[in-house]
Image (cartoon, rainbow, N blue to C red; front, side, top):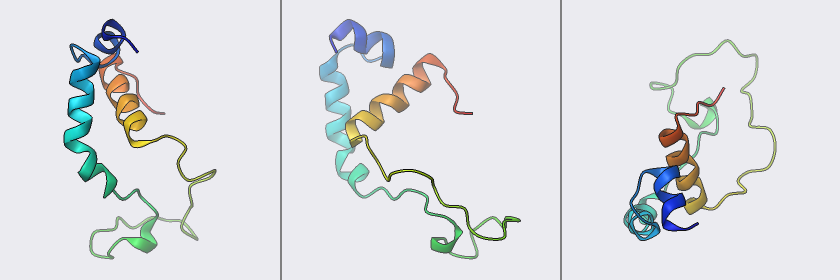
Length: 84
C-alpha cells in the first residue's frame, strides 16, 4: 500500500505512521488471547448462556498475521463497516 491508500483506509498520514503504531503495540498483541469459549473463562466473569454445550469457532484458527489484523480493524473503524 502506498501513503495515499493508507491514509484513505486507516486515517494515518503515511505507511510509516502505521508501521510505527504496529511497532509500539506488537509486544502486547503477541500476548493477546482470543476468545475460546466459557470453559476457559473464570466462572465469576462469564456471562451465562443457554447453550447445551459451549459453541466452538468454526474453521481454521488464524490466517492473518498481527499486522494484517490491525490493518483490517483500522479499515473497519475508518470506513464504518460493522461485522454482522
